[in-house]
Image 1 (cartoon, rainbow, N blue to C red):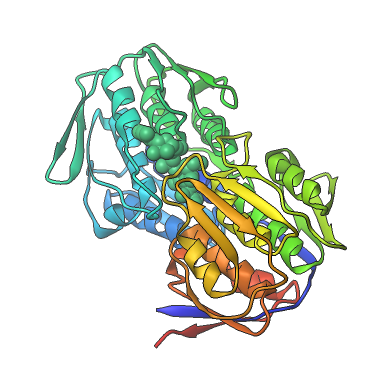
Image 2: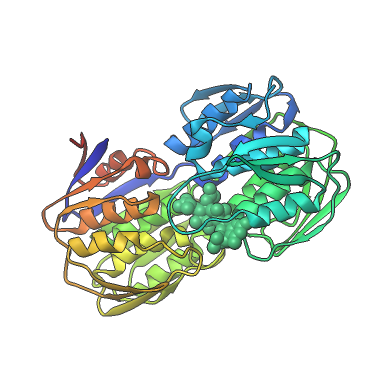
Length: 419
Ligand code: EPZ
């Protein structure tokens, strides 16, 4: 196991490049296995353990997978297995996309139940509802989801909750169904749109993504294509929050500013200066920052995946802030760690009440999950003295080269073995 050692108290200055979006990539890689002819060449895939894990899973199904830095080449014409049952499958949440992708292509799949960050109950009832509506029989057998259909037939599906995973998963299967599927109350996240753009480049006919009604005309087959994944809105937001917390001025390059609007708006409300310039934004903190209230919501609301880093920032903002986590029921595990560093936060159900303190002080803390890990790194960057962040395998799941990227901005972070 490794840990990060952070010498805090340094402002951040300079330029940073944002990588491809994790939550788009972990759906696009499984979607690539739906190509029954040709080869997919996918660029801007972030170099993180979650994408490496999906690549291994796809390989275990019989596809040929090659990685060269950010480019992954997949030949899925050789797939000979629709039973995804390796340790990797059980390890990560996004392996549920194999269900939709395999069901679409082979009308049959068996996928071990997915794992992922421990942030509350993570049901897949809406995924199952969608597959059943398309005509699949879904059973849970010995810890695996088993789906099978004589044929998939398009229909109208209304999701009871707005779910990124269910929207994408059902869209995957419906892309190769007979006739028209309409998904209502669909998720509008940029990565949902990106997956649809990828499928359309493979030959699918999907319209309306980015709104809450998605219309899919099923096609007979999908083919390989060249594609580039969108920039990671959450990675960009994490660095925006970090500079707001540490002070300094950074240019964040390779972003789509529109995807960052809810974060930009909150930071501006707190007193941070932000300007846009094409596919870059500049974030500068000159003075004091004010506490604000934040409620996490599906896109275009404030993303739950930035709630934890935001809590760290609010812990040193002037006055009281209230955070309302409305997506996940148990996404405050980082709060106990922040308290070890001197934060004044109390949690009641899904609310965190934060009284801003002058500063945090270095301590040994744990990354309890991916975004909690980012929250602890930012806490370490602000704090007086030395912070050790352990369990950083969670951070490596979603943030490429995190210490290199921060160090290039003037931070002092080293990676060591945690004995
Ligand atoms: C995706 O998870 C992301 N993961 C999560 O990011 C992110 O927090 C979440 O979307 C919300 O934006 C991936 O893309 C791999 P949901 P997902 O289905 O798809 C309820 C990160 O840090 N729900 O949109 O699993 C669910 O309980 C990770 O990068 C049902 O009730 O989330 C939750 O309250 C963590 N039934 C809400 O919907 C279902 O069938 C939203 O979940 C599905 C979901």
